[in-house]
Image (cartoon, rainbow, N blue to C red):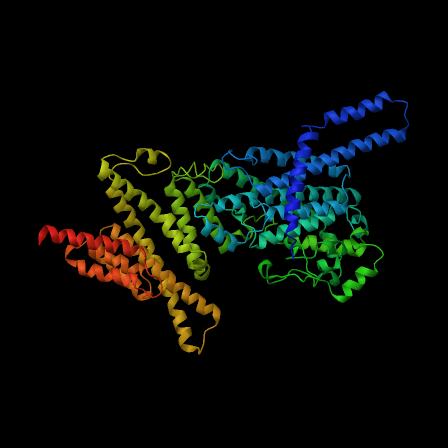
Length: 632
């Protein structure tokens, strides 16, 4: 039961913190340090106790400043980076500078033992929260949520939330790298072959384990994190990104590599320690670490912090945490003299933490030889496709769209981006028809890879015919259309797309055969097979509509008609294919009656009537009346 009022209170806290920073904090600590030094010098006769008090005041002021700045950075993540500098959100360059400054300060403060273990854990938890809610005002947004936003606002740019989540996650990686380096430094100083007793008082161990477990959960895939595309080890994908986009990707990759190397050093140094452990430590879980009881029921950590121990195999999306503890846990809570979070770790708990940390270090994504992590999944490929889609959106001249300095593709032509996008969509389509249907991948493929460019060409052709002028201004604002031979360009582009659609149709047709055989040999199909079969048929239907349009644009009327007829047989209760058939018939003057039939068929479809047919039909009837007046 999330407490919704907390969001309002949190936003008020963040704004108050920002005001406090503006009123009390300067760019550096020289002013406060000078005051402290001046007071000590002016009162040289004061005792050591008073001097220590002044120094503690200085340390307290510096700590407060750092924590306030860290909180303000999380607020920047939650608001998101400014797209064009026209709003009150932070600019990308300023954010990157702020992140680096805070990491440097944290490195110094951690070395001087400024923060308790408990506070460090809370900071990690806060950063996990701001990562999953980046650019969304502290609210989670699932993959379905992205689809809902897209449906509500067609020009909404999902690349914005993906970029901001990637930036926030890079900060988590850098923060945890500092923790890892601190832990490694203290571990190597104390003993060449560390044991639990030598590690027990290293305050960075517990928050490091918490942070690395969150990082592992992100690499394994989360329905609430959409920025993994920036962490893929795929150099070709960087070719289609702008300079700003590449700088973000480089930051993410560097942060990932630095963290991987820091945990690899720990793993290597603890190899002997691990060999000496008995079998009882092979199946340890977070349940055995009392200090983490505070974080049970906290969504960002729930994939690995469960009261029954270990990670839940169902994944984050399917987990619904229990609201209350068990009777035994309630008794233990009420009878405890001291809260677990305030107690010191035992040798046993320290050993368990080390085992869990080493288990994280062996997960894919932490190896210094592999950095492509879980982002190669189909869902991640779709996320990458959505990012390229947003880049392509930003290359279009649109006076209502802001000039997105993060997601626009300045260094790559729309043609290059469309090719990249098609390959990604194709992989998703062939790997998972059900997901493809849910995410409207075939619709996106048509709109962003083909029809967007075709529409642009047809508009310029129409403009040329009506005015004799070219849309030079539009071409200069991001179009790759050369204002010459537009009809030939349209024909060439349509012909180049036809074999791509034919190949997809062949691949999907082959998918139907095994499903058909399964259906014949079983009395009933399971739900997943039935859903997959339906998805394949729907996508095949839409592919035939798109292929028919391509044939029509390339002036292959007969082949276009064949595609529309196949589409009408795949979905006889839908009106779209009949509207397209009517359009073809209308282009042939002797088939006016046939066109009227097809328009009527389209409007009277029992499942999805095609409303645009009404306008087309009325136009047909008016044209027919004029023809009669002129010729009969």
